[in-house]
Length: 587
Image 1 (tube, rainbow, N blue to C red):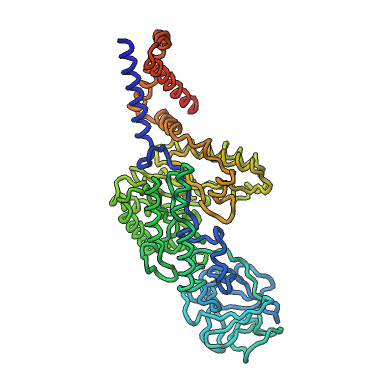
Image 2 (image 1 turned 90 degrees about the vertical axis):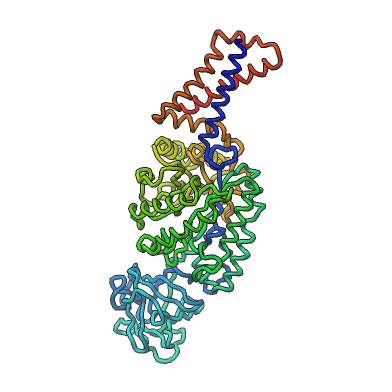
């Protein structure tokens, strides 16, 4: 009778364990507790720093859209200036250059450009003999100039009518230079300085090459950068999810608005098929929104400005893209979730605008899928991740995406390897525990849900990198939804997941004990919550196991003689030891 009772208790406990293991895992993952993912960055949304060679064949490749330039008259030794940063006349009267003397390029062809001031107006010339002004907010023929360059940094600026600009002795910029200037010191010759050339995204690539050549370059890249073999590699490493950045133009494939190039939709379809073949789930990440949500190259910004939050048309178009993606992939077995927007800028995107968009996006996804995860990204910059926990965006399967880097901040500049690792344990771990304990969305560490095995330490050894990666994995594994590494492939080797794995700089095998993490996560949540039914179940499991192994039963347990009894006894003690171990880990 005693043995029967013990068997019933053991069966009950084991069933409870399995029930909780399934119930508190991320829905949709095959036998795993949480997302262990990798980003497919630089594939369907171009980031030039990931693969710089994509831009090597562009003529005048240092004068792409968004490049910032300054012009200095060689005769006056003064800089061209848009007074007040735009909205007034243009003069040539500054001894030193600052923001008013800096112009952002809009590229029309390899030699034709439009010049935008810091206030958003364009340099304008209405014909031969005119004085150049900066008063118009839109650009057309009268705002288009041709740049002629020599090899010594000197340029001539010519209007569409063929007249050259010159700096007059009255410090004006006029379109009346007689004839064709040489490269000697004359009024029509300027020294051009490239102040910044930081944008190398889809807009710059497509507009830089022109449609036909850009199509060839991107087709080759999309067909070779990521393929089915990469999914096999990820599967063998225990990766269960890929986060796939896409641009808004995917909803208009195969003929998106200029200058964007079609073909990303077919590539995304392929990714879903490859993922399904290897039991890998997909998170579609809207990385680039119309008008740009952060002014960076990975949001396909034309010139570094952030237009998305300023236009209701842009926001409506973005919601259309979410609707397109949700309707197309909601029923696909490989879909895990949709991220509504990547890295909106805290400086440019008001919280109320973002929350309103997130709420509408959540409802759109729910219209097509009751269970797909809806991922919302924190604002980058000076913003508190908790602001999204207080926004009440949705009620089911909602995830907040945090981006953690020991980079891009002067705080990390002089930190040693040990300093960086201690920061992970002391600061990041505490924040994650606070967010996990909050009554709100799940937490995703990823780039956005992303992290990277790179830092500002210039002399780190392989062992240092291993320790740094191990610290991040141990801490970020506590995120209730999981994590995703940025990125699978990268010319910068420590950002390259595949390189880190193959060269043993990042070691996953000692970390990814997912079943253990699942139980610990559920127990932590139960203990931090007011869910008394779950607390009762947890208490019941523990008490039954202790009762089973209490003093009055210990002798009997050890006295088992048959092979079945010995196996049963061993499993009983193993189950109790496992529960106790996980509880100790939590506390």
